[in-house]
Length: 345
Image 1: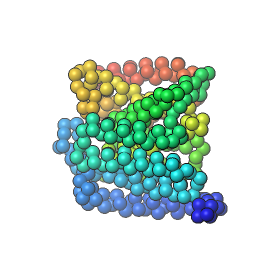
Image 2: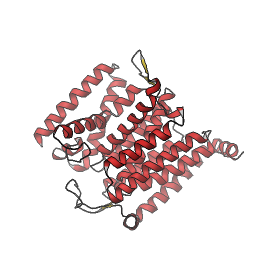
Image 3: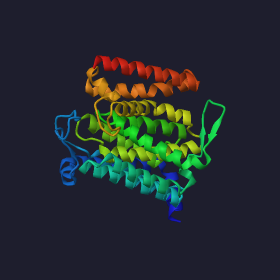
Image 4: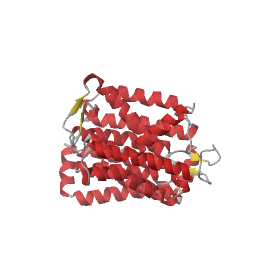
């Protein structure tokens, strides 16, 4: 009854409600940011530049972006459930996984958890939760411009967990220079909104608006997205990509190309670390965005990074609608660029 009344009211006052909703949440988010130093000090989530040799900032910066993202998206997700026809099971999976990923990242921001422990907790949570609903199981791999599909059958749960965990790692690998991770998140959610035609969905809008706010203050060196933020965003975008893929709004080859740069950079770094005798979880300054620092001013790196991220999917949609050719071009371009950047560095 309540959902029906709210839904009818929303349909009749959609633009006004949307403006009021985002004005209130954005105002609260900005208020929280104004108290970021006190709150971050209380929660012990300040990133100090002298904590290890991998830091590239000079002043202590609050890892506050995850709190803003959590606050904004949690309320939007709840409102979405109340107004629109969303099953309790789907809503619960979103909430459970969001809470787990956020709090693991939050504790990591506080105490620098072991990568192995984090991986075990998150993978276990994915196996136990994803299997509760077929809504989030990748049962079939469908391509937009290829004439075949792959039926995963009994391996669906393993492929799904692997895919989500890979995206989680790729997004974490992309976080290291101001503006890169938030702008990458904005690029992904905009592409997903366009492909799914979900322009009026509160939840999609909330992810976009909250990331815009975080991006602005991140570029100004006022806050970091933090592990809580990268963790939370990675699970949210993973679940949304799976949902829209199962609705045939976005296909696996399109997902592959929008994730190409952070994905291949993660793969390269993992193999390089293993071959050099190091743990794949050990950090370094060989990430793609780090290599750009000696060539481009730091404040422009995120712009260049996102333009390069957009290139494969732009070519695939508007220039060469052939998966193999675009894939070969992307691989060759990445390898040549990395070789040149390493020589310059």
